[in-house]
Length: 610
Ligand SMILES: Nc1ncnc2c1ncn2[C@@H]1O[C@H](COP(=O)(O)OP(=O)(O)OP(=O)(O)O)[C@@H](O)[C@H]1O
Image 1 (tube, helix red, strand yellow):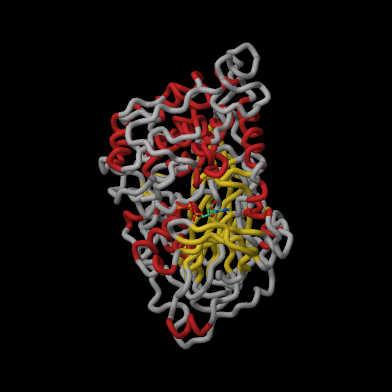
Image 2 (cartoon, helix red, strand yellow; image 1 turned 45 degrees about the vertical axis):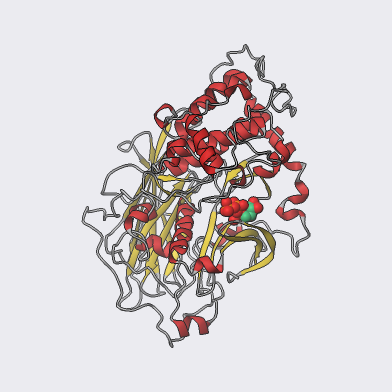
């Protein structure tokens, strides 16, 4: 069990292990914890993949993607602590060949494409978009989960994916790229509309043949969305929208034209109805020992204070010299090739179920790190992988390591020994005596006080992410003495036209590793426009490579054009009514059965993730 959490019950078991509902003991907040199967944990390849999943998730701070709160690893367990989605997998909604209204199918597609866009912008492909991995909440919002087999786009990889959703080129062994995610998302869209995956066969070879050669079964879907299906399921990736973002633009246009400006509202409402029908299966529907306390504000309260979760046991740590590896430690080490990656300390990003305060915040923006070697972008993407992985295994493998502001490469900072050696007593586990301060200080940062203690250095510093409500900063110091962190936020219409906000100063102490979520409300980009956001961080004592900076772009939702149907909602051939009633595919014939098609009661059963 991950220290600091209490298991409530099992939610399900996937190919990689089990997922449990748990509470964070300090606040009572609910989380989902995915444990890597014990056998797989002993397999370096699987463990590497699991760590990669965590690293991808930590970067994907997006409301359409299940959020990572913490990655935990010790001698016994490897676990991902993540946002609990109180809802149902889309698979369960579609069970028994049930369908959704076209607007609901479009809403699912839009949610998946938004999540995938974020991944694509970071150079990552999901590779396993399918109804099992789309979780639908009671409000009709959906979230993409399970980045277990995600890889950097274009990386030569072993075949992976789930056959009914596998693009033709993937069957030929071509590397996964964003267009193959587009194909999978289009398959899920098709399944929402028809209750079936586009191609079905009982033998992989037959299924591969259908994906490669069978005509796209567009006649099975309502007219207004046929073109979308044809585009998304195009055999040749060159005929498909190249990324989720480009497909999304086409989806918005087609949906608006066919179903009017309220299409998404109606779609979400219908999804909400369908999910609510299954409310008894929601994770929180079953009796739980304690009501989930809201963590919305606690995180900010506690921001900057280090939580020392209970350690997994000194005996384990001391006797085996086992190191508890943490994502953020990898993050802050990522900028330096020989940086310290292992620690005996449990690390908890943004304590108090971090990120939860921001989970419900509206975003609807994309963030894409700009090119250029001088700026540290997403650190996990920039830096080399942890020692177990090659740098090409890191997300965005073609990116250069983080470099200092002055342009010189980050200096190696490998310590001569781990922080705690076998036999030495564990680090203090109490709370730091005083919380950090966080105050606006004018346009320039004040001169920070000198840190105490000899040999006190900051060995790692990185801006791990930016979103509309602030930045996540990872920091590692050589001792638990005070570190002053100065954060500057700036935004504007272009990189050379940024306006700086008053800087923020936080004093941190009591730990050697921190991940700070520093709140700052950036302006929301107007529809169709892009705003540039920049976060610059520096510390005292200074990090070896000085200040770090991350720049991101946020793009507003596409602007709505006047309703081409003259203001009526719902096109004449939509097969959906203005109230969004479940009308499925409007009584259309099911998809033509391809040869070798077995009868499948509940979706494309019989195929697991490869
Ligand atoms: N964050 C979450 N919140 C709520 N339920 C979740 C969460 N993550 C996973 N689950 C549920 O836990 C179960 C197992 O999920 P997991 O992702 O491990 O497997 P899967 O996607 O069903 O299968 P596979 O990983 O083999 O493709 C599923 O029922 C899933 O809906």
